[in-house]
Length: 549
Image (tube, rainbow, N blue to C red):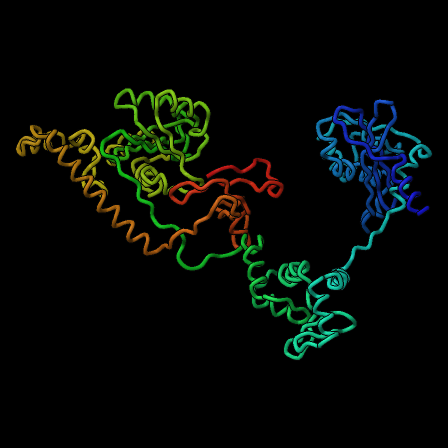
């Protein structure tokens, strides 16, 4: 009882750790030796006394033991600042050390590369270095010279301890002592399972994942059968195959590098087609291309969903301002649409773009991340190489593409589009646009066929026919697409998912790079197999939190 009271008294007596205050005067006291380095984070309290906030101590590595004394002192500062980063970032603080040469070293122009690198790292913080004699730094000196070595409990020791404490295994052990058991046996008071005439240590419930981790993660993330084979060399636990499979199915490393086999998921989603022009427009940027003499390097592509009519506008950038200027010009000549579909590019996700949509009563739909097929009308113009190859063929110099943009637009709009069975010009305007080469011949043929007198009637017929052709082609495409795909897995809010990596950093070897990233959490379920995903709180430590579709 006396010892307990003494322990209680010592634990409640100074020096006690105090709560961190970001507004208080802060000091970081550091020291280093060949054995280790240590630091104390202190703050001045209301009574004017410096009180400890946190302690830090670590042994030096074999390499660090050979550092010069002032290099060790610098290393102590670097490690301490890294350790207390959350407290020191963004505030002014004082670093106190007993190494005067270190204070002088930071004032030199020429310092050795190792100190220079550490100095660059420390430039992210606002501090001043103060020298204090060694006899006044004994409070931190002990942290660098008396490194406490803590021997962690080994897995084997933990297994033995937890089996002895497991209530279910205690019952089995008692039953074996009383009646005996043909499946289990006791060896030195521990429960073993008889498997193929070989005794296997019975793993307590709360240690099963540790054993699976050792035989799966630390053996190179082998498959279910090999993991089970490794476990059965010494251990046993019930429902082994089910638990091992569940563990491997949820192994983040395995999921990141897994290669999917069989049919890909995702059947084609059919969207209701428009019944008149300018209800829905699809927009996207194409480029960058060779910079022209007047600094154009992109093409803004706009497609009418109903008639498939295409507008191609040269653009100097992919910024919102240029897009809105183009809209004002186009909409004044034709009509404001009811809906615009785009990807999540910065030009279309900006506040200015959002306000323009709201002010003009236009519904803006942004496609999910990495799903260009959702904006297929415009992607078909961009990605089928027609736009790029045609621009290349019409110009001697790659930088002259802007001069041929109108001609390419003419070709797209005045040739037959398979999805509507007509040219976009006829469907939108009721006639094919004039061409500078054969206008006289075309006019004569039109007069002979009396097309000019019935253009309005023909346009209505063409539009009715286009709807039938479009619907038939759509159903056929879905049928063919679904043959090569299977139904999507349905997820619910709160489920954890991995995302396929579509782009790797330049220079990355794709063969060894992860195929998926994550996990992430499903925040909401949308229609058409779409989900809102977010970072897992406390797990994903990214600079920009994920919250996207």
